[in-house]
Image 1 (cartoon, helix red, strand yellow):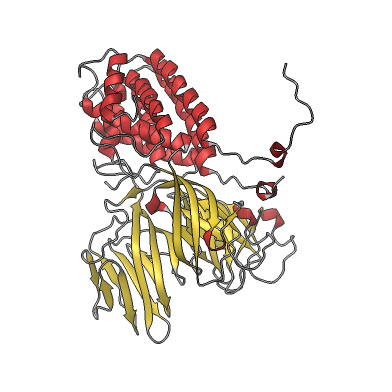
Image 2: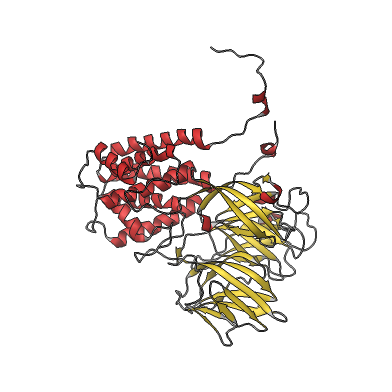
Amino acid sequence: MAYPFLAASDLEARVRTYLNEVSADFYTQTQIYNWLSLGAREIAQKSTCVRRVLEAITVNGEKRVATNCYKVFHVEYIPASGRKVMLTKIDPLKVGNYPSNGTHPQYWYEWSVTNAGGEYQFIGIDPTPNDTYNLRLYVADLPKIIHTTYPIVSWGSGWTAATPADWTLGSTAAFSATAGTILTWGTAITANVNYSLGFNVTNLSNVVLTPYAGGTAGQYITTNGFHQVNILAGSGTSLVFSPSVSSGTGTVTIDNLYIAKEGNLSASTDAYELDPQWNRLLALYSTMCGLTRGSRIAVAQALGELYKNEVEYLRQLNVEVIPDGKNSIIYR
Amino acid sequence: MINWTVGDIITLARDTLNEEGTVSLTATEFLALVNDGYFDVATKAQCYERRIQLANISASVPLINVLPYYVFKINYVEYYTENKGIPCILPNAVGHTDIDGYDPQYWFQWGNVIVIEPLPDVSTYDLYLYASCYPPSALTLTTETLDYIPEEFHECVYDYIMAFACLKLKRWGDFVFLYNKYIETLQLKKMEYIKNNADPRILHKVPDNVVVK
């Protein structure tokens, strides 16, 4: 497993140390993996530590923008030219009642509409978009299981370019052609599962780049830089990058691909994308569950208190944005 | 004992816990505890401090990925091209603050990315990140030393493994005592060695009056 992440087997070994059961007996591997999976989500929910910046684009005439995460904290509007701006958060009562300056997005509000699987949420944009507008969503998400190569930095094998092979595959995946040809990952992905992709884009010209997971299109990319997208994979099992050439010769280069998928720990090599600072607490949480199973309630409660306090402490210490004040840079 | 090896720490912990043999705690378990302590000290004390130079950042890149540097907390950012520290702002302030041209003037961290405000209008620029990081590799040998945390924090790793070894030994009361000792010592050392408050101007003056009671 890619350093510094800890695989399920490493975490299980730590839990077994704390529970004083080196080999599976009273505690099965499945039980410990389930507790670890539960703990990973609880840590992410309580600390909001899995933070991403997701791309989004409004639809003409539609207030709602689909998100796919625990919570949206901030929404940034990226104008075609000029300075990007963080939109002001409002509630639905204020829609249409606050002063607006033009028709571009100026306010946003949270209203969690979920589907039957609890997968989707939406935010609302005010005024109602009359065009497609680029947004960036600053979100907290659930922890996903990272691919064993994290990130993928070698594209020379494991990837297939459709004919004509307009992709040059090596330390990067570089596309240059007058029409788009897709690039497909050779590893089958899990259908109908949430995926998070992060990748670096350079040399983008005359191209709109769209990632697909299981046949579902993620948010398309039109700018250079590091991008993160969440995709609920469809019924297919392929992961694809599709460049659409807008005019002349289009070019785009992709490198450093981070792939993570939603799920519980099931294989010994599985690892969550949680920062290493949370791994020790993950083991503590699972130990607490194990002690509860063993009817050691008082000790479990003590460990639970320690775990709870440390989650909050680390959130304040390393997750929250603590701004500098104006006086911080003045010699007084 | 200066610059302890992993083996030194484990031996000392075994002696103090009255666990000289590998009866209850195996060498593998102890090595995992040392690694956990190494990470926990680095995380809580923010004591593995690095200055990371990000050179030739393309001005058109809105998000800078810092995951490859094992960064968990960016403390300060210097706009190196102009040799100038720039303040951290809340994300809410983006697009609303006064700016002077389009050089980098503010920043904030969101997970594994850093965002610069405003988006610079130069072709490329350089930044220094003053960041707290994880050690770049795990400890695998008993002959290794804890190279990536300052020497004054090495004893904290010992305190950590003493506490957590007690969990396996079912010495739960000892665990609570030793864990409190670990945290207390770590915080004292962090205040002493890591916190770096700047001098206010008043410290350069002779005080009007000093009374020692």
